[in-house]
Image 1 (cartoon, rainbow, N blue to C red):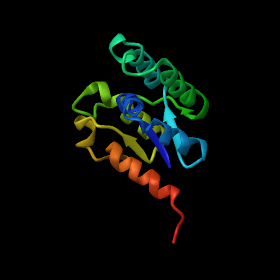
Image 2 (image 1 turned 135 degrees about the vertical axis):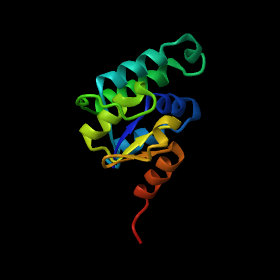
Image 3 (image 1 turned 120 degrees about the horizontal axis):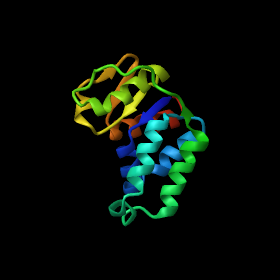
Image 4 (image 1 turned 90 degrees about the vertical axis):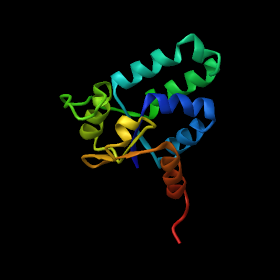
Length: 140
């Protein structure tokens, strides 16, 4: 399964405690994370904010950034198209199209309302975690 996980979801996964599940799936080869330089820069900038540094231990933030640098496939999106009602999210859709990701994981209603972009399903985190769990289960 190939997925782009939006920066805000990655951050909430650290606070919510389920980031390790994503990391385990990547380590086991069940998940191929896709990032771009813009996504990594946004994530690093947001994690460094003082308000978040009180919620997220530096070791966890470093672990997540290390996981993405080591395990994720870094692809650069093609030209941005105006698709999303929030133009700041168009880079995620361009990355989804360029990488042919199976899922774009987000809580952003501006993205979720689209349901799909090309071959990429736009998926709420809880549904994505369910799909990861199903990929981990042996077939009957």
